[in-house]
Length: 594
Image (tube, one colour):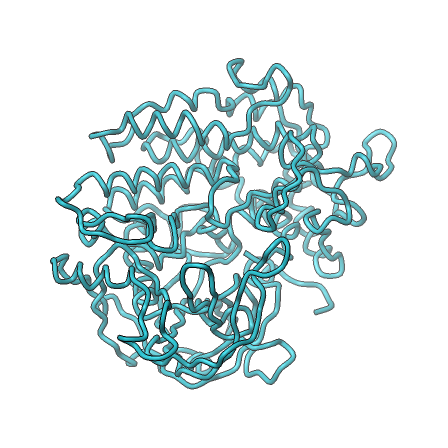
């Protein structure tokens, strides 16, 4: 809507959506209402049944080929109760479903992902995870192998998200880190007739909404998890991408030759002023050597061969190489005016790059890797709306200018290191407590839920933390080592088969993949299938600076994961200017839907 937006909008919600109250039930969560069952042969057989699509013979007409989520874990035993639902705001006590913004509705909120949304009621923000696929209910997505219901959670995934959010919050609290979601309960929607499907169509093919045979499918219960929240803007697509879009303005006076001197001489490409991207450093020799060298040693910290990371940038040298200043609001161009002529950059200079090499992908799912992009291209960064954001930008600018005017230290190295270190602390806490964020194989493919978009930036006024910035979420696929079943089974293509004998190395294999998979998404690697795209195109001459900062976040993550003392410790005096810069970054990505 027109008009200036505030910090609450920036931190929690920008893109409006609407909800209608619908039929169904609401249940409240307490930690003692969920319990892991024993990891017995009988329970494992129940678990592996989910790896097979539903059949018409067992479920009836319309269910054939329907694939439900299949995590490699035994089930949670859930005791349903409505005891605490009455303590929720009245509007949340009955199921809410996203509907078109122009249609009849009972509540307005903000979209945060395809199947989730957030609402503010009585001054408190809440997340509804699984309240509809955008505004089209719960369509069936069809592919060549099976069919899936989209836009919702299911009884076991809802219970798992609620319960593991609480368990992991309990683990992180002594470390001074908050969870993003405080679990309240869940909705179970009454089934209703639909005829909406998602199919890949067109050239190149993309998911397209179509209409088909009407379905109700009441034997598959659609659910929505309900949480109080401490933040919503995602680390990758909002925070890091936003900070990187600011680099041409914040670091306009930085000498790129000095940035290049902060890299070790052994860095591939340095002689050509084009240091090898961090994602490539993290994705090849490092991953292979560390995995092999940790055989029989995992999960002990500080072991294994991490020597491939020795070519990462030197943090101290990088900090000394930077000259930062308060960025002006980008009114007409994503790039600043020419520092010598005071003119807008010409069209050729406005070409932006995500890497050194040109790339013209034909696959629609890889169009985000097009390189370079020019003004007018759909993937060219969009300018923030000055009517909505210029007032808040100016407020942040006053804080930043005061910081820099009194000789305050550079904020970018501090932020990248602290963000990476917090990621490593969270991942190490999960590893040490026998928890996977969600790394495994199933008939739908390979999953790794430990990635840079599964942490959010805390609201600046959040309480109960040790001057941290981030909070983890999206735990619906997480599970414990005690209830892990793939030690007893193996995937053979899209089929799960019982192993001849228990494989005690399987847990370590997945957890090692989780640790390095998370590192790769922080590094800027674009080869993962997590939804983390790492897209923040820049002038080509500024790519070494982006790479240097990604080096720093990787180094920090790996320091924390291996329980090393932080190379850049927390400094409470930097919190206010750091948040001022972070808010500017969020303004740059305010139109991005995670």
